[in-house]
Length: 505
Ligand SMILES: [Cu+2]
Image (cartoon, rainbow, N blue to C red):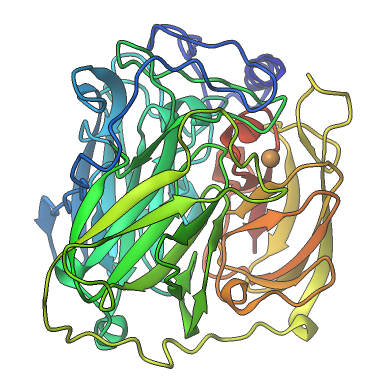
């Protein structure tokens, strides 16, 4: 664990503002562990989950514990819990409110929320990142801004951004992969009156879906493979909202699904068994300016697609399945064995009048202008020392004490990202929503032309993105107020494909 030793040493020699107890460790939480294997990792699971038998779980929406003129206060307890995920077995998880996924927060844009994250876990430190959120970096969930067991932190979010499908998840130094895999992830949805006025499916017809792959031992315990040398952890069982291969009863009408690839490492290519199309209305950072119909959704870890699926042409009594057809050259397609083809089955169970619409214009997107960019920064993603060495950005494995870039507040920058490796890396930039200028020199397709916070950097490829760095600044004397950029294959992130950067006056 090069990165952990480096990290602990770095803290000891650093400014001393942050103290990480040595109790932080991977051991002890789960019994079974697989050594990091070759190939797709994972595998070796002992249970077989039923397919299309269990009902879809829809995470409950968390209510604030108090509201005032200035803000709403939410309290989330991070807990160890034992759940029946595979029928007849028990799985130890780490969950927000003891569940996985955690409860959904649904908030209004520009209305401040304070989310108090209470670490009630038995023995691990945590930090919570609101993925896709634009916030003061003191509340960004920096990997060394940790909450010890028994303590809490108030994350103060302005929600000053375009409404979007966000998610919150753990971001602990060296342990993000472990702790997200163990269950620490949930939805955070920002909306506004404009979006509510569009006539899109809402209420019970608007459903968040997080797709995750996991491997279970015969006794139901999770098996995690920290396969950072390869493409990361691959599970052999698909969970949607924490349930293996669920079924969901729908009416013969349109539904809005906010789909999140919440897997540690797996890429998906989702298709519908009836040849139906996904009508994409939004991406990571909010609505597109117009809907885009596609036959397949290609999703890297942490990407979101906000889609409409129309079941009006499906006779009552019939079903449509969403499948994963993998992807040629994508991150590992069928890695890990097991059944990663079946995802979820929609059973059309009743007729209903559909009062919803999909407007031909959604939310106008302000196009960022390359001529406004004050600098183009080059970032290279690599691994220089061979298979068992850490991943790097600009030649360096992650060093929490090192800040790679100081961005001037209020400016627009182009970031030019180059992949020196032979695999895809989904790159996530904190703080901002950006726009993709080009992918290997080509204009992105319409579904990748909206607001994004995570994108697929192709093998040997190059992507340029443009973003504006408004509103919030880091404290140059406190590295834990850095923003991050990292690979969202969590095993790559934990093995150092991550970098600090700051916004400064
Ligand atoms: Cu990666």
